[in-house]
Image 1: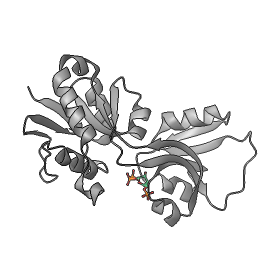
Image 2 (image 1 turned 90 degrees about the vertical axis):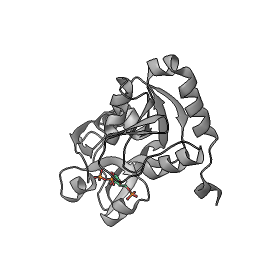
Image 3 (image 1 turned 30 degrees about the vertical axis):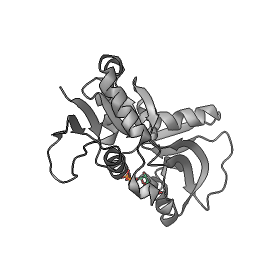
Image 4 (image 1 turned 120 degrees about the vertical axis):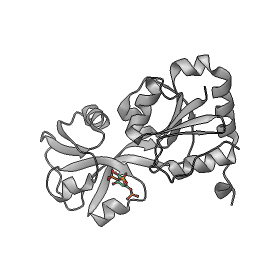
Length: 209
Ligand code: PRP
């Protein structure tokens, strides 16, 4: 059976494709609605980014590519042998630029797609918070008054700027990671190692240019 790789067609798709192709590995086209694609000895499973750790942890996928933000939030029991280096961004606390500082004892209402990481961040600072879980467009929560601040991914910073928010604290530096199911890492050692080696040493043309 081919080694199964879980991937999302989201923000890491382009970087993953560049790296696979530079490594001489097969990589599927983004077009098409098939969710499982067999190609050149690999089996690609297209899942939502937040589900990549779940598929890998449960062994449905042997490997996966996922952002370290999503991986830390999922807290999945998987190996994480390779930082692929693309998809760099940071998880940060942001709030409206004009907000006055609240007293330290006030409970902050925090909107986020990352409730576990957000709660841990503020717990570490001894700051009481109420976490509101959202699925997307998190910046809106501040704009519309659902929350005092957000914990969200910042890449270019454009979404924050265009919505009048600014970063007040960094939570986590993030990048794309290759993750591996713990059983597959041992049982399919040769195949996993050869995938790892190929991806590790490959430098995409776009980076060389
Ligand atoms: C992410 C993140 C921010 C935005 C940051 O959202 O949640 O909203 O990208 O990128 P920027 O700093 O380059 O503006 P995504 O596009 O994944 O959509 P979502 O809001 O629906 O989660």
